[in-house]
Length: 480
Image (tube, rainbow, N blue to C red; front, side, top):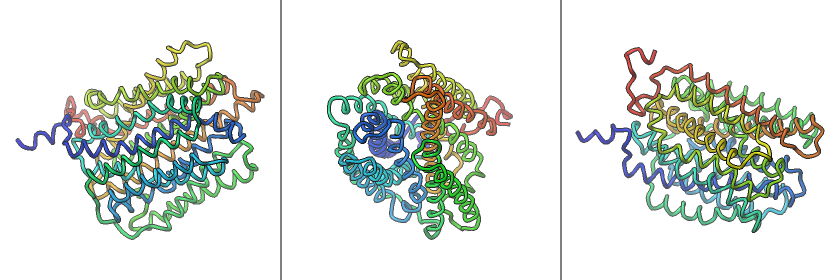
């Protein structure tokens, strides 16, 4: 009878809960930082003398840095200990934040954001790995809720706080706020988190890291600058071609390496493979929201940063409301049906943002954003739990590296897709600055990208993930 608490998905052990909350502190810092900066971009553009639409480089440089360094996180955590790597990552992120706040040019800001990304690349996946190795399989869904609920406070607090800072103080303070949070996180990890490590599967795959870096830098830089007149067109095309060539070279390398940095053989696991592909498509569209929404409110609607922040925070507030009921929803509907129908409705809610106009009542905009955030939160909770459902413990670090790399790559592509769509719409319409109709085009493009993810879940059986929630299929053939 002593095993009953562990088998009950409603229960989470004290050790798992404490680890989740501490890791969430780091995620809170990262999410707070990202959402405050998104709100502050138009004001920062005035400081640096750039068009607001081109300030997406401040977002994509950070996301690109994450994507480049995340592949190495699993191996480094196994080699040096997850707790040690996690603490160092917090320090690097905090130092990067200080340098961002002291930036006097856009180039300095981008460099500091890249340093932040190096810290975030270790901080988020290694923190998740700590939790995965602490929690039992049947605790996974509830543990993820304990992890993500505090971290979601960042996106809730970030937009209005960022708007307040840039309106009444100075945008530099949006970065300095990370200092006390980083210090607190470092102390909590040192005192309460165990040093968990697994022996690395092989020697460090340096060639794999170099090929991954060439691939991601080429694709992200090329997509970010393509059609936006930042660099000559041939430079963008060359970077995209280089990225594609690097990707093919990495695939060839990974098939021949005993322990590749990104292990694509994990895609053969049914839950991991389907959840990963669907997540990539879904997150690509959703990744554009932190860039497009604040920009629409401030540039398209002419609202002050503080007004924009108090509107855009509704999306994250909706996500926060979902977390307490996520496990019950997944247990009631199952992972497959949730990913299909909830994913499709989420795409529709994102498309509704294209209809926003300055004349809309604030309550109507709040309602759309709140419901959209609520549904997207359920979708991500399902992905984040299901993807590890059939991963052996010995391969958790590899799975975390691949999954987190995919998350960040998709988010980077999303920001680039939103920025490029907005620029093309603005140029086609002949507007000197982006107008609400131009933002509508961009939102419709990313909404389509999001909706495409829903049918992918049809590839999984109805019973997928039932062991994670304690759900029982209605008949022996329910999973067929």
